[in-house]
Amino acid sequence: MCLVLTGSTHRENLQALASFRGAATLVELRADFLSRAEQSGVARFAAVCPLPAILTVRRARDGGWFTGSENERMALLRRGLSGAFAYVDLENDLPPTAVAVPGRTQIIRSYHHVTATPHDLTMQAAACCRHPAEIPKLAVRPRSVADLEQVVALGQRIRRPHIVIATGDYGIATRLLAQRLGSMLTFSSPPTRQGAAGHMTPTELTHSYGVPRVSETTLVNAIVGCPVAHSRSPRIHNAGYRSSRMDAIYVPLHGERLAPLLRCAEQLGVSGVSVTVPHKEAAAALAVAGDDSVANTGACNTLVRAGDGWRGYNTDVEGFLMPLRSRRLMGSGSPAAPVSAALVVGTGGAARAAVHALTTAGVRVLVAGRRLQRAQLLAAEFGAEAVELQAADLAERAAPYLRLVVQASSAGMTPNAGVDPIASIPLGGDETVYDMVYAPDETALLARARAAGCATIGGMEMLLAQAFAQYRLFTGAPYPLAALRELGLLEVGQRLLEAGSK
Image 1: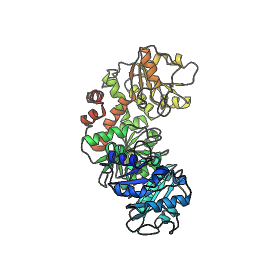
Image 2: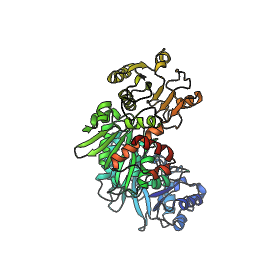
Image 3: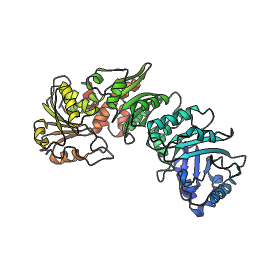
Image 4: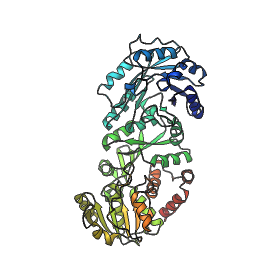
């Protein structure tokens, strides 16, 4: 792993290096971040740096901070190269005579596009590969899953030491699985200032994800969704792998369309996939085979790669039920529900799992959706009733179903926190309010419910419960209690596991 030093002074950079020395094998001195006064000491930095160093002076158009003229930038590079830098990063459009590079310093020939993935990416890669002694580097920002596919394919096509990176939300997996793109390096920044969009801290890379220990034999699982960067599933699954000393990693894959996301997953050697918003119904359609819960709900939140394609499962059903069972609001058999009626808000994959589980247990359900037609279709499928969330008589229609309120839409989810989708429905304190959203920990709806004296269930419980089932599908092993201890979730996790075993 390469630690990108983004301090304004050499002292700040050396302090950052001392803090993360055990995680990094290489550093990149971003001289464009240095103050003018500190730039004169660039050559000396290489002498005091305890690790091999890359010298970089990045232009603003490439995502850098250098504000001087191009002549001034070249002068700073020449001054720095009088020091013992192991590498220098030079752009692929620089003339060969722009900078004289000493023989002890290897050139990284780079191309950066900070806002998009260009249509001529292959040509830019060829320009970076012109000299066989240089290391080609390409860092671009995908704006679609198709762009991400292109970047992954390019990285796997280059047959020499190289660095290929996708930045931004689409590129998180390429930083975590750099080896799967053939890349010789992945980059991180200190928490004080990012060197580029999407950089994680060394602690996040090494502790949270286990990078750079990822190898060709590492079991790779992923969560796919849009958005997905906020997901806490990587934290849960990776903690399980660490506790079990398993050679495995779980990464986020962001994208707006599922089919190309799964192609990317296959390119990256992903074995198991957690599926989240908005892809659960598409996953059910794409799976070559599915268990009964997928057939019954028409939604799939888990895919396991097999020889003939992706096999589908729905652990949301069990994940939804376990917190209710742990509170004795739902029995382990069917029909065995102390709750006789429920309001379910939402019409997506999570709502389908909830409606299926509740109606199977004999609970009368009212489905409330932003679009009445979707709510009616879902309700008709399971013998429930339907209402539009914007209906003037929503509170009156919902009143007989408020023993259990299940919020199964994305309303209130980060980054749109603060939304209460049923603000027009008063809560009297006798209701149990179950919000599947887990980020933030307390949604506007849950805060209102607590204030009214209602019993509440947060989304973290369902997330944990369905993750336990996914973990077993992905690894063949039960989720380890030691990981729950590390996450600070031992009490709730044990309660859910006990409810699931009954």
